[in-house]
Structures are given as structure tokens and as C-alpha cells.
Length: 268
View 1 (cartoon, rainbow, N blue to C red):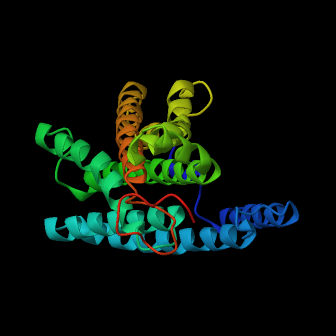
View 2: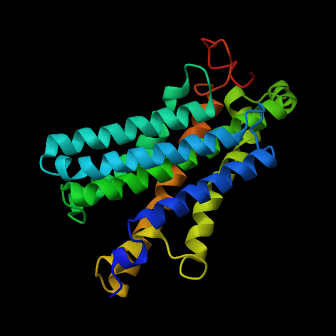
């Protein structure tokens, strides 16, 4: 069995390769002028993301052995993961004070799955098992929430006239927004679907490889990876559906000045 240390030894060579890869990503983003809709370049964001990842993973590597010793510390760490995910997703979707609504789709997708796993005994209340499983699910919900929220609000802004036309025909504001935003928001499911469809043929995801490196049999690794992929599809489907509903009801929007009604919420 190939040891993890043989696959990726933690030495100076690995550090140099990581630095070069990060520099390549930053350079390409800068030369290609990759930017978001507000012309904010991604080169700086990539550099900061890489550095933050290094610092955060180093900190987690130190803390993980500490928090798994007691249930209160474990729950606190899980809440921290959730809070960071909500803040990240919310601020990716909007700059105003409705960002905290991102907590709803993430919780709605992740919490039932985690509770079911604990009640059935498939995952014990131990940090070494609960933290990675919950982290994977929160990460999937975060991605789906961001993609669905951004796509839905972008579509409503671009096709605002169609929303107004639908309301003129008698549609309620929520129903009019749903008709316009639903196809765009639903595209947030595509990354998860494609990953599940191509698993084993195009990619060998992290859970599968990690199990193998940990000494598990290929069969057990495959079962665990199948669970992760199916659970992620469930989590992401719920997250997308909830985000779409929040956008349609005007609770999650990009208005600079928040309307106190559910009606005026799709413009910037």
C-alpha cells in the first residue's frame, strides 16, 4: 500500500512546487485580465486565497487534535465552520445586509443529513469522523448557494423587464421571479452532477484517495465516496431550492437600500 508520505512528502520541494503553481495562477489571471462583473481582478484574490489556505490549514492541523477530545469543543468547531461558510457565501452573493440569509440554505441542506447520519450511527459523535464529513457537506452547500444565488440575481437584473411584464399579466412578484430565475439558479447543480457522473472515469475524488492512503480496501473506499457524492447531491439540491425561494421572495437581494416589503428586491 502506497503511503501518503510517499505520494506527497511534506518537504521543501513540495513547498517550492506549491509556490510556483500559485505564482502561475496569479500571473495567468493578471495577464488575461480575469475579473468579475465589477472589474475587480482575480489575480490578487487568487494570491490571497492561496496564502490564506496555507495559514488556515496549518492552524487546523494544530487544532484538530485538540478539538476532538471533547464534544463541546467539537460542536464549537463545527459552528465556526458553518459561520465562515455563511459569511463567505453571503458576501459572494450580495454586499448588503441580506447576506446572512445564506445561513438558511446551507443549514437546510447540511443539518438534516448530519442529524440522520448521527441518529443511524453511520457517523459517531467523534471529531475524527464528524469534522471531515460535515466539512465536505458544508463546502458543497456553500458552493451551490453561491452559484445559485449569484446566477439567480444576475438573471433577475438582466431580465428585469420580463419580470415586470409577467407581473403585468397577473403573476405574483414571487411567481414572476421564480419563472425567470429558476433555470439559471438550477445550473448550480451541474458541477456536482458532472462530478458524480464521471467519478472513477475522469477523477478519483479526495474521499476515495484518502481512504486508500489510509489503508482501506478499494471496495470500502468506493462505498464511502459513493455516499459522499450522493449526500452532496442531496445537500446541494436543497440549498439551490432554498436560495431560489429566498431570492424570489426578495429576502436575499442586491438592493443598496433594503426594501421593507417583499416586493422590491431584484434590482441593484
